[in-house]
Amino acid sequence: MKARLSVWLVVGLVLAGCSRGDGDDRVVLDGSPRFPDVEGVVERISLERITLDGGRSYDVAPDLASFSTYDLAATPMLHRRGQYVQLGVDDGTAEWMAGIGVVVRAPGKAPVVYFNGSLQRVHDGRAIFRNGTVLRLAKGVKSPVEAGLVRAEIDPARHVVRALVLP
Image 1 (cartoon, rainbow, N blue to C red):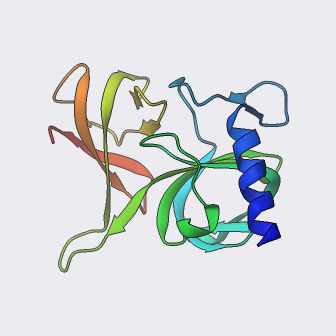
Image 2 (cartoon, rainbow, N blue to C red; image 1 turned 45 degrees about the horizontal axis):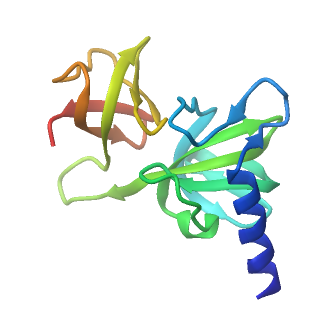
Image 3 (cartoon, helix red, strand yellow; image 1 turned 180 degrees about the horizontal axis):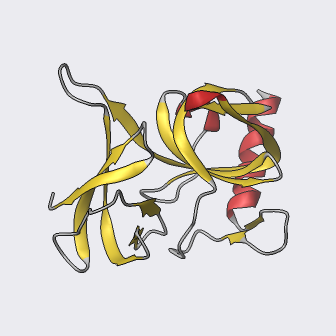
């Protein structure tokens, strides 16, 4: 119980503003774009280590900020197993983790992660959303609107948006 309380206290303090440790980037949960260093499906997770699909593994910073991209609320990091996340990584250590969504696996269809958000703009092959989420677009993906509500269909194996559609 004490360990959980400590984790929540640290998460709360980190969400007020956390440094990635290199002094150059700062995770600010005010809608500013958050460019992830890596993203993928969480295969294994503990308070010490996060392993994403493909065996990519990262240490966990003691003050890791774990939050939902939808409302920027703190979320328990250990509940992200099997979900698609973005990580801010500094020198092999995950400093922040943004939960994007669950992987939907329908019979006869490729797995997909759905993300609904208010698109601010598309720039340099990336979709930038009002809540700060930044997603890489697959080659040739266009938005049906310049700005506004869209659904991103993310390919969890390639880590790119394969379609932007109206919800």
